[in-house]
Length: 510
Image 1 (cartoon, rainbow, N blue to C red):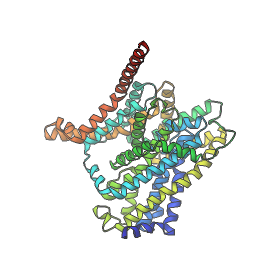
Image 2: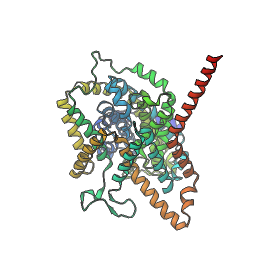
Image 3: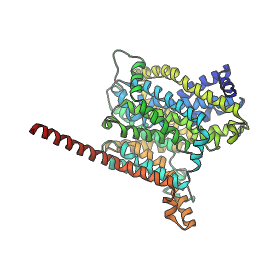
Image 4: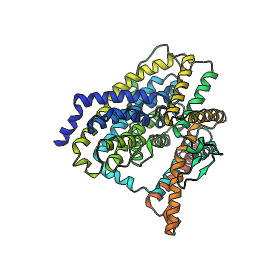
């Protein structure tokens, strides 16, 4: 009964208003290219300093929820992920928009985001202490193998040539080594430049590799950016609900993946969405349609990256270890207020915890009407804005978004250079997604490998350090399966085709 009383505290006029404002603000900030969910939370943290811990948590959680979802708008309509977690949404979302189904893609994104968010909140409420222990089982070696497993997903993300995908990932890994080493502090590939000491900032690279090629293509092509229907069909909610019901297993699987990935500190929504997209494509009966506007691709990525909101709060609140970058900002805001995380969270601080969980549930539910409403007008605005206004607006936002990350004009130059390089590589079949994946996973892999190597050398057994853990062996097995699964599936399909051919030939002979 006490839990129900605490949960009802989220329905107070103040908390309800904070959730509504937080979701709306998060959606708007997340939809702007370059302004990530981390930035959305960080910008609005000072507003919460005068609030009670539960109200501050509700508002910050609502902002986080809205920003993660808002990134899908620009990913679908402009082929530019508003947040890093929306990278995989561009794969099928923008092709849908190109063929005139942008409104449907936005609706699917909203439905998937709500589903994923609710699964994440449910995990936070029911299995938080248990799942938090999983994060403690991951040491440097396990993170190294996890990064390797992430790189094997390139075989599923590559369009046309897997070799070019791995080459792109290699380029991304090379970019991740620029600057001061993660472990040891060595300076690498700076060529005497002070600008490169800080390395290639991930969001800046993301903006450059995704946004600049789009802007160049918009200027270079005379036709309209998106297909304009003579009759506007609105939000297409009934059609979206039908597709979501057909892909219910895909939604639940992707939301579960997002929750589990978020529990691992530092993984974040970008990795969760890429893993879920890969698994959705692998489980599909029509894998070749992915990347060409398959609605299930949008459902998979958006369910996963929104599930990271609730999943990321599990290690943050139970262990004091941020599950995702925005969680680190939220944790800092709570520590300023004197709120302490730990095992007593569901006992001593039960009133704050359960009020927050209920508020996060409320914010996720508010995402449905707000997302459909804002998304409808966003779609109509994007398709009607002329290129002469659209291109300068996006260019301005990319520059401002890049500069605001570290207040560095050098990041803007790096972003532009990478954008031109990405545009050139794209013309030869090298997609930006493997490059970004390599850039994201590079520091994780390097830190895990170097620390594991030092641990193994100190213990006198490198092989046991890297191959002695059950978790490591499991991840290695999954990595091997991920690499060879396309080959195995193709061989199986050929053998099955031969058997069916022989059977039909025998029937014809008889």
